[in-house]
Length: 150
Length: 150
DNA sequence: GCAAGTGGTCTCGATATGAAACCAGATTGG
DNA sequence: CCAATCTGGTTTCATATCGAGACCACTTGC
Image 1 (cartoon, rainbow over the protein chains, first blue to last red):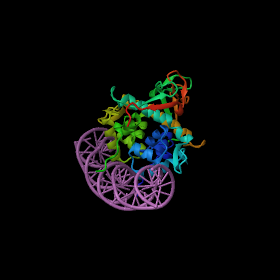
Image 2 (cartoon, rainbow over the protein chains, first blue to last red):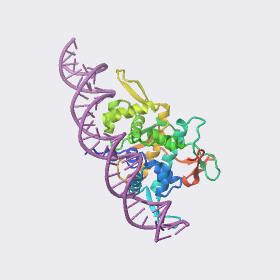
Image 3 (cartoon, chains in turn green, orange, purple, cyan):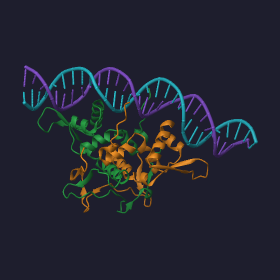
Image 4 (cartoon, rainbow over the protein chains, first blue to last red):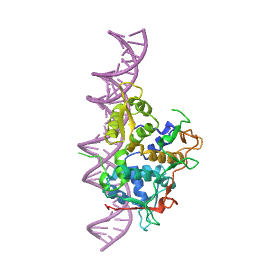
């Protein structure tokens, strides 16, 4: 059997994160969940995903504690999928992807959605990485230390 | 022909970003590139990826302007793959994934790699999303406005 | 009660993946 | 300078996964 590769045990949090949400659909489902999508059909029609795929992904994400099911908020007998605390923790991953996409994948005139602060309606600030003392760090100001090499 | 779905034209920068780097291997390759990996064999042995897959991914990432090839820095006749400016822009995506993985996918005693400021050796600060006026925003302080609905 | 909507499952053909064989050019050892 | 080995791939093949759509049970609306 050809097994899909997993780097869960590589000792790298990035690899482990991608093991959980690194496939094509998961982050799109999570993005929609942040935008308030909750019902199976909403995800399906919004993403154009095959129903079988969606059922599998929703089950996986639920098993992995990123989504949980809840009774429908409109009082019907159906259930809804909502982000758990763990799932909501992925917000900055989505934001980082969004800012990178805005920077590098759109022409100046291309229409696109935008993330704003709900209270003021103003665009959010760019993400920045800071050192403990507050200085802004770029990629080559940092290094990864391997606590458990290979 | 069953075509792999693309959401490039959905008007969402997140979808477009995932269209470019949303597959299983791309972000792992990029993560390794941030860690200084440059040569085909280094990627291959470090990730355990099949050579055919790696060749395809490196070609795609190069075509998409995330990696570029350069003469080997050791003077040999081989080439190296290095991140472009656009590729380096993905740094915060990797950092966000890393912090989420550290928070939610590791037990307190599990060994893992860690991101530090090179100059001081101290761990980097957590990423935060700020409003234009500096306040920290959580996911439900924000909303996405659709400039081009559908 | 009946049609439509919801939330799936099942099946099928197309595609992508992983492993391994193979190969040409570059490098190294002797 | 010749052979062995290393590097950076390509090709092939079996299998796994994906996408589309048929199908189905239960719920809701009328």
